Amino acid sequence: MPKAFNPHDKYFQRAQRMGYRARSVFKLQEIQQKFKILKHGQDVLDLGAAPGSWLQYAVKIVGPQARLVGVDLVDIKKIKPNILLIKLDIFSSAAEKSIRQKHPNKFPIILSDLAPKTSGIKDVDHHRSLELSRRAVELAQKFLSLNGSLIIKVFQGPDFDKFLKQLKTEFKQVKIFKPQASRNRSFEVYLICKK
Image (cartoon, rainbow, N blue to C red; front, side, top):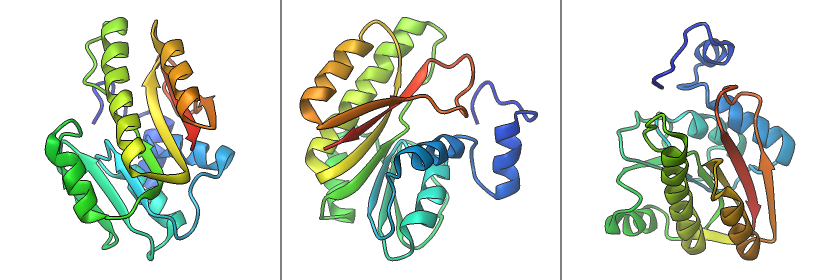
């Protein structure tokens, strides 16, 4: 549950009504409506997957034949049989090995809603977010299939443009998107990257 949890938040209430574990599901829904990233039958790797709402949403689109792998530092309650869960630090040496054991092939879709524990100091949080985003890109270089899509959450700040420029050298297409479901005070954006 986020620190700024608000039971009167319309997205939180909607998520509860619809059986989703977190309001963040509506960010992915907006990304999907605009960019049509998820497709039936495609396998998905979800980094920073807890509590599991992105996996809940993704599996409805990709279907029961697809395999989804969720990775996070904390436990995620089981969702569906075709969703495999890994409790690990994405920076650990075991992370890549564990992902490969669960799913030996590359993924057409990698989602990253990774976020640091926020300190309230914008530049500190921005740099921590970039560290996570860079790791997501490293993992995408190993696990994303040709013509695949990577979605990354990033906190904006002084080094954002430099990071964006780097991504544009590694991906054919990079688009910036701020979902309406993001909190007004949030400086997060999502980068939609196509290999």
